[in-house]
Image (cartoon, rainbow, N blue to C red):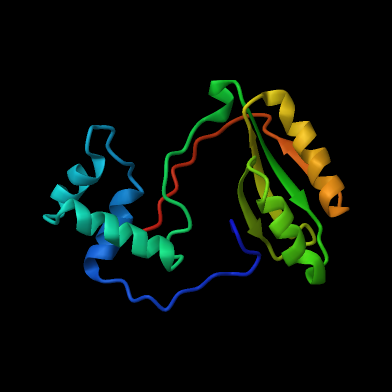
Length: 160
């Protein structure tokens, strides 16, 4: 979870349009001059209302991220999944340090011996190892780097 080691919950009540928007946004965003306007028209609302709704969903942590997904490796970059075993009493400090690095795409707490999992994304594929070393130096904990061996596409969608 980017920015915090604690599970974030919200009491925000989603209305029918929020739910429809969340379902629609999982299917991608148009590439055009006015993508927000294009999506807004699908729901017969104006562009400002769509933007305000997305911002509210971000501000209340219903959405934790809204933006493009890049394939770092196809652009010459590096991408790797990493895990750490961090004592619970030090988790928040370590999460803040890890999340402060621009190469960390996202970071999640897990109920497991390896309780911190994150993705490292770098501009150059050879830089992943340097980021791993930097995290180890900053935190004092071992980073288990798990580079991708083979890629599989699994379409994942959560009906809201």
